[in-house]
Length: 210
Image (cartoon, rainbow, N blue to C red; front, side, top):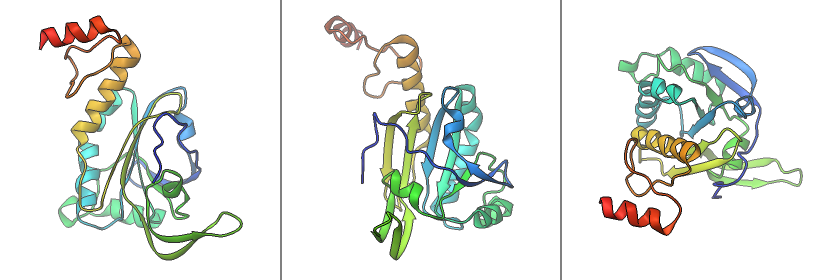
């Protein structure tokens, strides 16, 4: 598993389902470079148990992300047809109807592999193609990508462990605060809290206030 923080987010062009039901080809995060931050997260599989709680949780906070200029994009190794079917299923029946942000279909498994979150057994042939020797699905990876396309934050959970959307939003706020003010954010910092300048005096001022 790789650490992508500080590096350019791997580029891709894949099918995705957008606006809750429209299948588009050639979807890429490159469209947001220079315009928006991106919160890109992976989940293991459609039609499962923990995954819909996460997808609905991100949808419930979608306007908060958008107010901050952040595009939310999901991804799993399922097909676009599977994504589409799950999006038509009511929430009360385990579906994700009502989710409107894009869901990428990583059927080649290459997106998950390039982001270092592909779980399962596989080999790579001489042409660099993935050859499956067992089930291949994505861990619960999450990547915060800035407007320049650089990964600024990542977290990867194992399958049973759902993520905190509030923590993802906190990290967005921290990144934006740093970009706008040049101040770094200490432990448990939240929007509106005192941050720190990257000097000894900045640290002293913060500690004195706490």
